[in-house]
Length: 250
Ligand SMILES: [Zn+2]
View 1 (cartoon, rainbow, N blue to C red):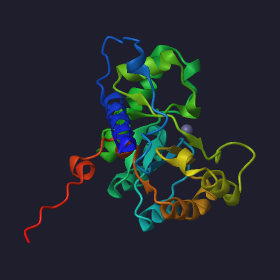
View 2 (cartoon, rainbow, N blue to C red):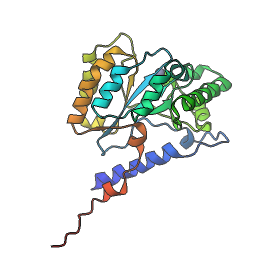
View 3 (cartoon, rainbow, N blue to C red):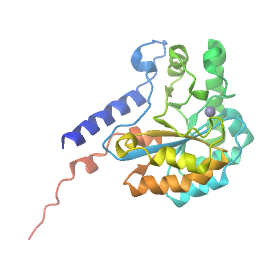
């Protein structure tokens, strides 16, 4: 019972942080620029997330695998990728997944001046809305995970919160990984490590697509539900947390 209450408190906190309005004055307070790197524990939920840089290829099998397993995910896509692959970007939304802003050109923002950081986020925002019809805010992931206080403050001013990850599958880190490596990397984590985790994978990586069915099967068989980042951070609905016994007339 205590665990459930704690999980709910953590859920509310994550929800509040995630949905808190960005400070238009660019207040660099810790809250405005704090980032999310995992969801609350105790709810057996995991968010599989997929990043698509400008050069990532489209991903039919990946989408088929997710559909077959009835999994919804969050895709952090660049504006350039969405422009090159509009049908794929649209398919993400049509299949019930959600998008996040992964900037326009996938630059290391920590090396860019303020104006460029702003443009990278704003332009991607505009393109993603136009192509998918979905508002990616407040979901934003820095290219290469490269972000600092300054970059996060700019993102926060624009209504975005940094979504980092709990577990990196390493599918984009050299040398190239085999599907077996990626499967082991994730399924060998303990239930405790996986509970509430945000897992990073990439669009357009063959071994990731090949590893995905086994990863999903393993996580689901251990009782985990695979959800979008938004759902991972959403507080529990009242009906699922009270669980009042139905009153019976004998
Ligand atoms: Zn990326």
